[in-house]
Length: 332
Image: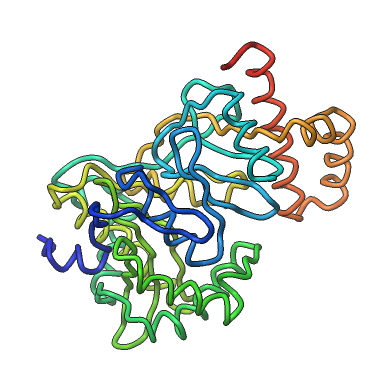
């Protein structure tokens, strides 16, 4: 059995509910609003935070807002969403819903006790064993995260064919790591071979859930399966913690990464069905949510099929088309 105390220190602790939580340019006066700790983490990294429609929202490029926490569906009114967009000046919002129309999506979760190898796909079991034999799972200290973590970030993004400056540029990565100091909900746990970091996770422990936010690994160590060891260890630790309802392994991404969906399912995670809702601000909706624009983007995608940014734009436009039908049909 994994020590619960060790797991809690490694994965992040519970947020304090005694005082209001302050963010850049906004103070949230609802200390029990879900996702407040994660919102604070985003704010310390330079993101704008808004409180609207009974939820917290954080800014993402290019001028979009996303709702927190990821595993909870949100059912705002169309009028409420447009009021949020007008007040913020954002181009659009994205959130998970059970009632709004949108693209098929969902969130990966594990909820249960007694997690063990019997719940892992038979092909993954020897990989988990190999990983646990090779690596020690422990908390990642700040210096290791700053130096080794940055290298793992760059290698992981290169494998996946995308680049996020926050994880690839030294100054932005330093700000990310420093922000963790003031966020007791946020933790870093890694798979170490001696002092060498083979893989790590950033997690958020909040509102009775453990959220796995990011996972990066070293190319050279993949043959020894540090990711498998880490996923198994963290999931098992969470399943043995009676204060946790479950583990969220993130939402289904707009741009699918080959093999990642199957990887999560093979560790016993299930997809809670949700619709991925994309809503543009009214003026942007008139400008972008039409067949002409979608057709132009599809043509560019045909010419540049490997461009993940174009794939992302195409998916967002398709999502907006699905979601706008709900407003036409009277979603309010």
